[in-house]
Picture 1 (cartoon, rainbow, N blue to C red):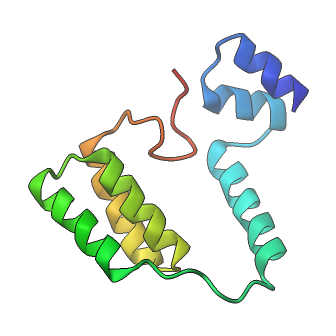
Picture 2 (picture 1 turned 90 degrees about the vertical axis):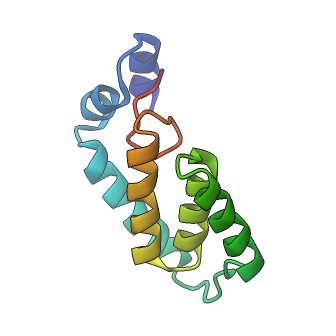
Amino acid sequence: MVDALKLFGEDLPLEQVIEKAFGLSVAELDRQFLAFVDEKLKSVKARPPLEASTVRRLRAKIAKNPKDAESLRALAWGYLRAGQIVDAETTLEKLRAAAPTTPRRTSSARRS
């Protein structure tokens, strides 16, 4: 972790920091981290559902402005938390198309 902080201090892009500090691609680090989290949280049975009113509100905002990155991100995150992986992935694809450089779009986004 200290190595990663030093590399960030050299203003390297996230992908290079992960590769040099951990010897992994960002995709592999994400995969391993999600597996770790899944293992740690497997005893947690309930996932808070995405409330219907929230989904309606976010979809309405997105219908008015399909490039509303914050609403797309919130909807994708809500779907993911609710275990609706396909809906989350579809929404993330829309987010990537709408705002390809949005820093919060994925964990592999470049740091600015």
